[in-house]
Amino acid sequence: MAVKNGDHVKIEYTGTLDDGTVFDSTSHGDHTHPLEFEVGAGMILPAFEENVIGMNVGDEKEFKLSPEEAYGNINPEAKKEFPKTMLPEGPEPKAGMTLMLSSPDGHHIPVKIVEVTDDKIVLDLNHPLAGQTLHFKIKLVA
Image (tube, rainbow, N blue to C red; front, top):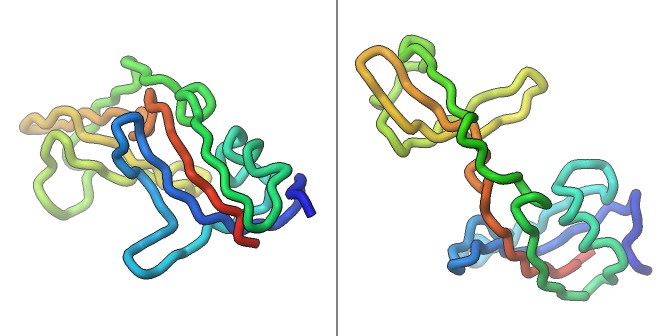
């Protein structure tokens, strides 16, 4: 049975960047934790879902997503200043660190600190994978 919208699927995958760096994988050492989702429910990137439709259990596939199909291009205007006092207690913020922000709808968004001064921090609100071409190797397991 080929995958179609509405199906619940389990996929093993490895995602890499153009230079071969692995940015995400369902394999962790000796353990594999397949990605489970409902096709067409908007839980993952639409272009990723499109590549799963039509696959059968056991099929393997490789494909790539352009920045426009994935997390968009880098927006140089997507930087925002925040007073340091808004940060929770914890390690001293430094440029290059990643923080997790919570959106009003409960999603967690990773953002990078690009500048720290005595009283403020500047965050890059672009997704960490913005501007990147994403390469996937996937296997439909259920």
